[in-house]
Length: 243
Image (cartoon, rainbow, N blue to C red; front, side):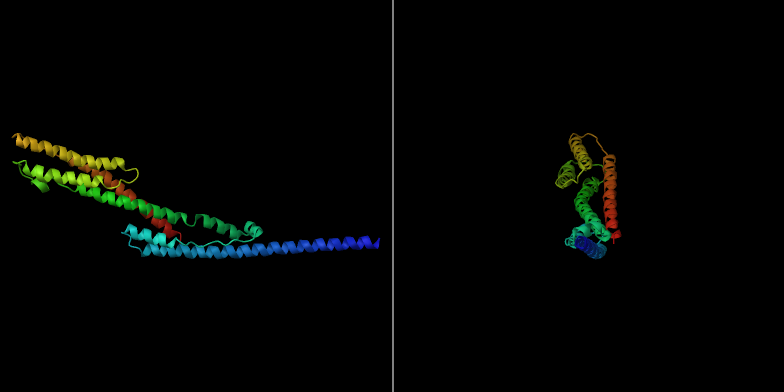
């Protein structure tokens, strides 16, 4: 009976040794993953600081400059190295690093997209304002008009040119109604001025006002400009606030 007992004891000791080795291996894997995770979290923090500094350093009035700063800084985000499977699953720092990696670029990519949209909006708003800043009196004066010549050669062409120039500008997504409002305001002046010229030639009295159309378009445009500015400001502040 001595031999079987001895064998049993030896087998038991071997199994126990394997358990100890396995536990140690798992502990080592968790430690390795923890270290990798902590390194990445530190790198992500430094990355956020660099992006925030770049945004702050850019000219806040130049959308292209801000976008270029953001895109340049986020082109090479920190990388999260792999770790042993058991460590990845059981190291809290590594799991946190995975979460951070999945959301790290999101706010900056959103800001970049907002800046791109805002650049289109900026050009659209500027072109619309040029239309709405036109004044008929700048071309025919403010006194009684006795000749249709200035109306046909100056007033009408000025508004036609402004309308067409504006019409060639890309319309931001969701702003077709606003674009139509601006174009219609210019077209209203063109139509009324054409009638005015005809009435002058016929020696008939005629007058018109376009303040209602232009004011409605200006109010809508200002509301849109405020929304665009607010969206960009919010996205910028969010990105900076992550640092």
